[in-house]
Amino acid sequence: MVAALAAGLGQTPAQTTFDYAGATAYVRQGQAELAIPILEKMLAAAPYDLKARNLLGIALLNTGRKAEASVQFKQALQTDPKFQPALKNLAVNEMAMGLQSDAKSHFEQLLKAAPNDPVAHLYLGEISFAGHRYARAIAHYEQSDGLYLKDPQVVIHNARSHFEVGVTLAKAKNYVASAQQFQLAQKGFPDPYQVRFNLTLAYVNAHNYAAAIEAGESLARDFPKGELYNLLSRAYEANGRTQAAYDALRTATQVDPGNETNYLDLMALCLTHENWDLSLEISDVALSRVAPTYRLRLQRGAVLAMKGLLEDAENEFLIAAREAPQVSFPSVALAVVWLEMKKPEQAVEVLRVRRAQDSKDYLVNWFLAEALNQAGVSPGTPDEKEAVAALQDAVRSNPTAAGPRVLLGKMLVKRGQADDARRQFEEAMKLDPNDASAAYHLALIYRKAGNTRRAEELMAKVGKATSVPDSPPATGRNLVKIVREGSR
Image 1 (cartoon, rainbow, N blue to C red):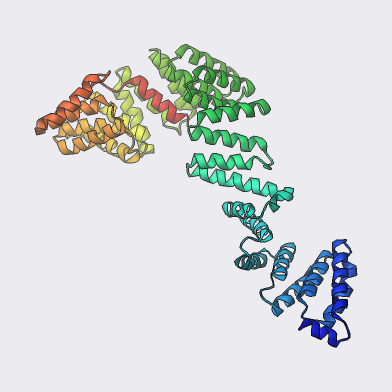
Image 2 (image 1 turned 120 degrees about the horizontal axis):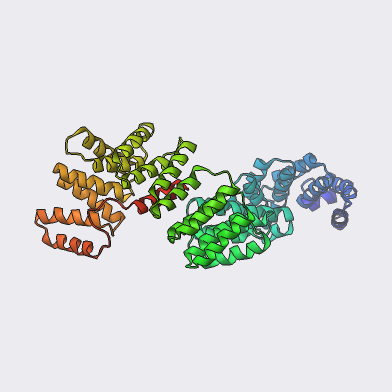
């Protein structure tokens, strides 16, 4: 049909082919302005010549006449809606004009006809990236037959997409997949430290400590930063390399001497390994280098309590409480020390004040009940009812803590509520299978109920325990718990 129209206007098919080839050569040589009049003449003779009209659109696009180019591509599609070259060029032109929504629609239409078209995938990757749909962007880039690698800006976009997907996966605690994304993000990501640090962190959270150490040590050679050495210490400690963990944290304090976190983590490591004297030395250095917060006083007080210096610990916790009156941890730690010093009434007083400020603080509720219990309560008295209510609040606020459940179970036993007590002890043992106190009281309940076999099983567990079943909570263990939660 096109050839017949051309012949009817005095132009032979051979001449049409020659003119198209010449116009194509001009476009390829960057002289699109010379191709335009040739193509316009051809289309005047053969208005349905799709190839000529598509090439005219390309020529107009290359000379900056984008709106006119779109008219030509659309006109070609009116003639043949399935003409893929015009559809693709229309979409590319719409991207150049900032019409992303129109371009997206046309590229998706193109993919229905040509699912593997690399140009469509490349641009849809860019559109997805701009819309923060990073996983979709990656999928399109990967189907662009390597086109994204030919544009440095798109390479960066691909890297950023992998990085953002890695962050999203990390937030979902899918750390293995997160690490894979950070690995892929390394090529082209504009901030090599950020992406490699996140890779190391993902490895640590995925418990792949060997990979974390390898990645972190490599990064430290290029970027010796305090936060990185701090992260490396976590990997070393988890990998059983405690001395390396100490050394990494010491390096962190040297690289970033004004950062309190590194001193706190080094003290916490000492606390874990019962290295009390070193922990106090570190706290002295920290006090001389940084403006201390309650966290430093809290850890220092815990170490002093571990050494049996209860009055010194009491003083540190009092200072911490004054420095951070809005925070409950120093008050709870102070109450624990007072319980050790046989001053339950003082502990009750300070914790009642804290509970009035926040009735959902499980540590406050737990140790208020402990203080009331140590002060001496009987079932049905106001203090006993207050203790039970506090423990019930503690369990609701933190269902994963075994300690409040054990004490609540004991108090329910005294009330004669054996079934309710049994449930608390059972839950406590699920949370902490080695809790001798929960096992002991649960055995008594089962024995009284006639379940001798279960009672004997539990008593066997009690016999293997290192702690006395019905003793008060260990001060040191509780202070470590408080310090760890207060340092988060």
